Length: 325
Length: 292
Image 1 (cartoon, one colour):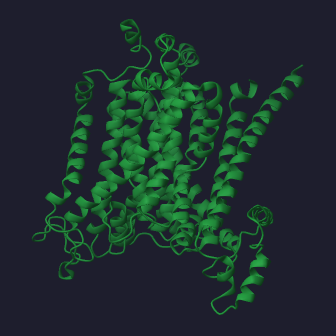
Image 2 (cartoon, chains in turn brown, yellow):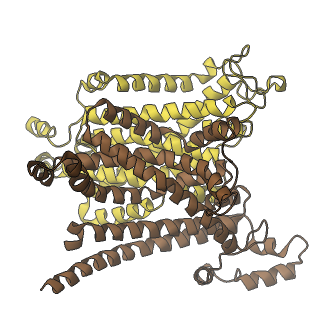
């Protein structure tokens, strides 16, 4: 009986995951289609670009046939999806490097930056939100909430420029341009600090706010009243009974904020010349490097959809109400 | 008929007289309202207030610090009067945000009303489409549209509008579904009103507070996003004065003349903060049950 129930539960999570995956497929298809159409509307002919300035019309025609550009649009789309599935995103117009290669080199630094900023901002945001929720209406609550509104209103490049000006330039404490090395080296860590502080800085506000709301909800719940009535210490009530339950919605909401984090990352990378995907994408758009722009946008979108999907499934697996429903 | 109108007060409170009074009771909100009015006035009357032309440059004044003679906020790297640039920049930035909220919010609200009103056939398709749009973060929409149309103000406005549509559609649909369940809609329908009249006369007015609160909060976010896109070089192109673009230009001179970058950043911060605080206060004053 018990085993049967477990299997049922797992099936529910599985069914939920499958449902979300089915919903995500048309979205992914849409991303790929938009990426394909992007190349159709841009004014450059990839065949001419690839052939170079001195090419004869015959050579251009040969390249066009080779790339499948003389085929109808639907066939071209099929070819494009086929190449995409084989990891071929084309070649940069500017420096002739395969897009996949550039993406491979920049994804690591971007993930590094995102994880490093979440690493300090989420615990701090949860702490501030819990304090604010627990002492609701107090001066502390008001101060934390004011800080959080200010946090969501400040442009991330403002924080970045201020850190560069004070910490990097005036006090000369930390490097502020580029990535000095991999994360496991001392130089790498040093160069990561300022970008991670900037990006995390705009993330504390939303996390604190969401935690406060969740804590307020939980503190008025029956099981917390029971815990208090049992004579548990206040600390145990808050950490064991309130916070633990409040964290489930917070985890999901943090997952939903990944898009916000991504936006901040693109700006932060530009401010600190951090060699990530966001900076690559912006540089590609500004220099009209269409294959590179297309590749970065597709990969960023797909990555975002996959992360959202993972968060959603994780939430279902974590929350007993969804799991057992 | 009068009884039917009274019941509308129940689920979603429409703006009543006294909203302003309740809003002003909160000192923070009162200050922010004043700030918003002043900022909008400064933007509208920029040509009258500005001492010089925003494109006039005098290289002998380049990077003059704030407080120099005739330059209360200093000059930028090309020797253009920063206060003039700021006033006109405010104009461009606010206009960009306004256009995006108006276009994106308008389309979103229309879709939301249609989804709620024709729930049987339109709700599913419209909301699935909105879910798809929602799965793109605003920054990616901005990058994609800048890649297609090229960097520029129009690209930013399109991107911000596209990113606003699904959010507004969701909120309006939610609000309209509550109203649709009320008796007075049924009563109005029984009088033989056309659908369009029902939507415009009875449904829409009762969703206005939700729309208004969301638009205010969204305005702040849109300004923030728009300035970020311009900062990246994907929005307003130099020499157009726009706050994000000005901050980006000033970035190159950060170590010699920090005011060129800092002043536009502070102005962006103040605008967004004012709209965020005002939006929160407006929500509490209009209907504390609204929560986005």
